[in-house]
Amino acid sequence: MRKIVVYELVSLDGVAEDPDGFIPDWDEDMDANLGTVIGSQDAVILGRRSYDDWARYWPGKDIQPFSDFINGVTKYIATSAPLSPEWSGAQAVDGDIVEFARRLKEGDGGDIGVHASISVAQALLAGGVVDELRLVIAPGVAERGRRLLEGVPALRFETIASGVSSTGYLLLGYRVLP
Image (cartoon, rainbow, N blue to C red; front, side, top):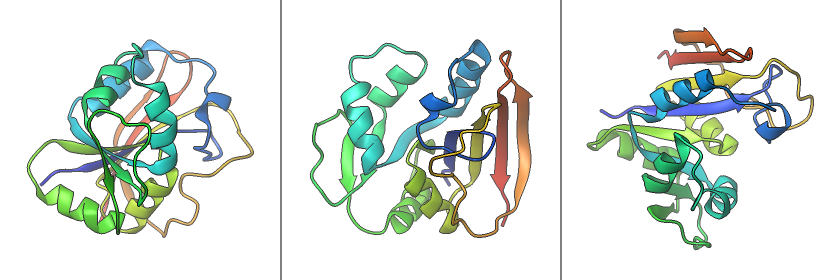
């Protein structure tokens, strides 16, 4: 069975919205961590807002390791509206995203990533279909913005990875416990 892995950039106070505001720099350790996370993924589930932003930004970019990955991977977009602009490998998913993710997990393939897409991550966590949570935690308080775990029911996790990047970001991995 495939795993669903949520990867998010968050501030120390849990804000995941607009990470450019609390992650001013990016280092080689963060690149290596990202490379490890996406290395086993062959599909991504995105929310509509993330799709709209990323479909305009990522095509044609050469920011590795993420550019080749996100431009080449199959992308399932939680939306009932037609996708515009078009982006290679993107397909709309209309209906219950938790049920769709559950069916996707039962198929063949590698891990399924959820990147950015706060509402999708929250829905999948609440729906009990997320297997791992991978976080990059910035050493600063954002104060404003949507928080990753806001509204998510009580969950338990097991730490499966931990480290600190050369510029002080926590690189954490958790397995969601039943």
